[in-house]
Each structure stands twice: as C-alpha cells, then as structure tokens.
Amino acid sequence: MSSPAQSPARATEISGQAERRRTFAVISHPDAGKSTLTEALALHAKVIGTAGATNGKSNRKDTVSDWQQMEKDRGISISSAALQFSYRDTVINLLDTPGHADFSEDTYRVLAAVDCAVMLVDAGKGLETQTMKLFEVCRQRNLPIITVINKWDRPGLDPLELMDEITERTGLTPMPLTWAIGIAGDFRGVWDIRRDEFAKFARNSSGAQIALTEYLTPEQAAESEGDAWTDSTEEASLVVDEANPLDLDAFYAGKATPLLFSSAALNFGVKQILDTLVDFAPPAAPRADIDGNDRAVDAPFSGFVFKVQAGMNQAHRDHVAFVRVCSGMFERGMVVTQSRTGKSFATKYAQQVFGRDREVIDTAFPGDVVGLVNASALRVGDSLFVEEPVEYPAIPLFAPEHFQVARSKDPSKYKQFRRGIEQLEHEGVIQVLRSDLRGDQAPVLAAVGPMQFEVVEDRMHHDFNAPMRLERLPYSLARLTTADATATLANLHGAEVLERSDGEFLALFNDIWAMRRVEKNNPDLPLAEIGTSMQK
Ligand code: GDP
Image 1: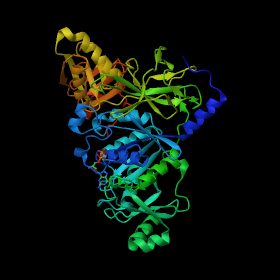
Image 2: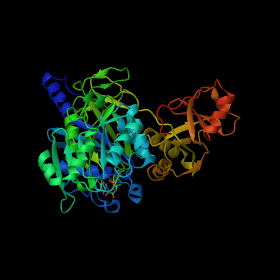
Image 3: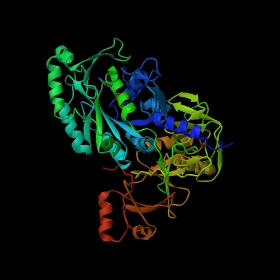
Image 4: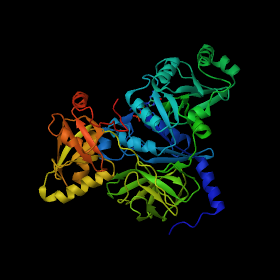
C-alpha cells in the first residue's frame, strides 16, 4: 500500500506539522554535561518524572541512553537515537550523539539528520578539542548553532573571555540572549535580554526538579542582587545588543550564534534554552536532493537512513535503521521504495527508540526520526520514498585514521566472516579496503577511532559467529588517489594504495612525513584530502 495522492487538506496538515518540528543534537566535549542537559530538557517537557541529572556518571546507570554491555562497562554512549517531546506548541526531536571521540563518525551522521545543533561549553574549560571538531563538522554542513555555556554554578572562566574565545576560535559572533547574573560559581539567575527581565533561580531541594524561578524587573533585580546585578549587566552591555539581540539571518547562515548560560545539573537556564529552540531554531525545511532540487515538506513521504544499529536489544538481536523524515507523512505499514535498489520495503515495525525505551509509532512528520526494525536491507545513506522518487545526497565518509587487517580465526567460517564484514560495512561501523596484493581473505578495516575495532570484533563474534583476528597496520593518514597510484606506491616503504568498497582509491601513509616524501618525489601524483576529516 502506498499512500493515496495527497489531498490539499493533508498537505496543509503536513506543512503545519513540519513547521512545529525542532530537530537538533547537542554537540560537546565529553563531560561538558550533554547527558545531564538532555535529561533536564526532557524534564522540562515532562517526559521523565525526575531527572537523574545531579548524579554523577556512576549513579546514572538507569538513565535514558545507556544500553550495550560495552557502553555500560565504559560509561559511554554508543547508540544514537532520538528523544521526542512536545514543548509549548512544538515537537522537539533531540537526537542522541555518542560522547566518545572514537564514535565521531556516528555523530557526523546524526548531524546530517538535524536542522540545528546546540554547542555545549563547559564554563570552566571553554572550547575543548572535541567541541571544536564537531563544530567544524557543523560548519561544513552550514548548521545553525546555539551555544550554551554550562556549569555556571561552578567556578569558571570570565564570561567576556568566553565570548572572545568563541569569536576567535569558531569565527561565530556570539549573540547573548541571556546573561548570567553572578560570576561562575555564584549563579543567581539570568538576565533575559529579549524580555529585559531577571529570571532568578533558586535551588530545588532535590536538585532533580525544575528550578524554582522568580521573574523580576531590572529595578527589582538591582535591589535584590545589588552589585552582582550591576556588575554582570554592565559587563553584558559590552557585548549585548539590547535593542536587537538576535540577527536571525546571521544565525541561519552559520555566521552568528545565539548564546545562553545554564547549569544543567541544577536545571538553571534550561527553560530559556527550550524557549530559544522554539522561538528561533529552524523548523523542518525542504531538503535538497542529489540534483540540488528541494523536495517540499508536503510532498509525498521521503526520508533517508542516517544510522543503522544492530544488537541494541540483546534479547531480540535486532537491526534498526533510523530514518529522518524529510517530506510527507510517514504511516506505519506504508510500503516505501528504497532509491538505491528500487526495491519495496514494508514498514510494519516502526518504532521510536531512545536508549532502552521504545514505542511503536504510527505516524511521523518531517523532522521526526523513525526506527525501522528488521531493516537489514537498509544502509546508511539510503533514501526512501513513496510515489515521487527522490534521492538525497550520500552522507560523506570520514577520513579514516586507523587501519587493521582482519582475518577469520577459523577458515571453515570464512563465509560468515565475509558476510559479517559486509554487514558491518553497510551499517557504517567500519570502512573496508582491499587490494589484489592482500587478497580477499584479508581485507583492511579502516576507522576514525580505534574503539570501532572493538565493536567490530564483538559483533563478528556474537552476531555473526565469525571470530576474527586483527592486525594493526602502521598507517595513520589517508588521501584520495587514483588506481594509477597503485604502481607508483607499490615499492615504497610506509605507503600503500587500497580500493574502498565505494570504488574510491585511498593512499595510506605512515604519517604526514611519509606523504610529503612521496609528494615531493611524485609531484604529479593525485593526492586529495578526504572531504570530511577530523584530522586537525
Ligand atoms: P556528558 O559526558 O557531556 O554527557 O556529561 P554528563 O552529563 O555526564 O556530565 C558530566 C559530569 O558533569 C557529571 O558528573 C554531571 O553531574 C556534571 N555536570 C553536568 N552539568 C553540570 C552543571 O551544570 N554543573 C555542575 N556542577 N556539574 C554538572
């Protein structure tokens, strides 16, 4: 069954629903407070009774997003799924991103599926490495960014220093929408610049509830807070444009960033973040296909797979493809076409997944994320549609930095080994490189972070019953090249050419020096940087 031709009434409903969506992800360096903020946001929207936000990581084992054994052992989040909640008159989709740098490729794919990012900065640390790398990815995608300075309840940097750092290191102009009253460590509340009022926060006894907030006029605030109010607002006046705090065009163009202060752990400033998302973050908008043509949000259903996850539920050994809806209305049971193969796919099992919680969903609109269960034919980057064909641009692959040769431990299980590697490649867990020289039995696996190999080993063993051995290769740098380079580099030490499954040839080098030597001796050899690189 495909959906009947869209009636004008339905088209209007879909446009209205798209307009209500805010789909975003939080990017941050590990420990800046991403999980805490996620819970605090959800608490505000009341999807979770009590936020576990004030507890440290070790106490957080039952919070929303931990699931796999490895993840539990390490206390990191590997899965990426979406938390949906309604707030005011909008539907907010918060896409989960892995905290660990090794899984940055997963984060990248999530960033392909959102309309906005919240950059969370630890007030005590400023912009950290992982924040900068993720920021760079957002910039490549032209994603609008909202900046949140978190942990203001703890001693930290000077706010003006933080503004300077943001301007200098990201090139974005900060546009404060709130300003912390009280220095870092003495967080009394925020001056809401748009409303010109003081939101005075009080600690809630449990800390895991919405902050008690009193709203005061500037005059009342001056009286109540004395010097803290005067000092902070004077400082703010150096960077705040009170008459026009927000330049929406500059925000959408990725040139300026609305900025707010928070303490996610105390739930301070969280409402203001939500209000900013509702008031200013871009709604789900038409998405361009591979030819650059926009597909209207009220066109028949379409979407693309940005993540494939297997083994999420140990009991079911299932396989979920996460689809970002781009146009139309998704209805469970709908039969959609997969652009790459032209094959039909029945969406009988559609779920909303966040961490361990799942719910069957019946309908979804542009901006929403649908988890399709048992979707083993779907690959990362696949477009799905009904009625009017569409193909969205592929999600670019990262420049790998780690390389290992994989071999089946048990030669009689070579078939399983091959199937497993192929499957993990489709899921985007690793990239697979081959060469005639190395032969099919020993493909080279390439990844952005070394922990990805542990995921591969674990999955090969448990999901595919194909135990394997890995052997590290000394390379750390990859460049795009052509088949011709194979002969040139064949006899060189510290370099090698391999073909990736997408048909691209990659030249691998021990290090930048090895590459420079080759470049110097072979000036005509094509060596191009891989578009999406985390190497800095
Ligand atoms: P993530 O790695 O970015 O997800 O960070 P978490 O949310 O796990 O937070 C890391 C640590 O910082 C935890 O111990 C949190 O309780 C703590 N934390 C998070 N936000 C705040 C905050 O606003 N203030 C303070 N004092 N601690 C916070």
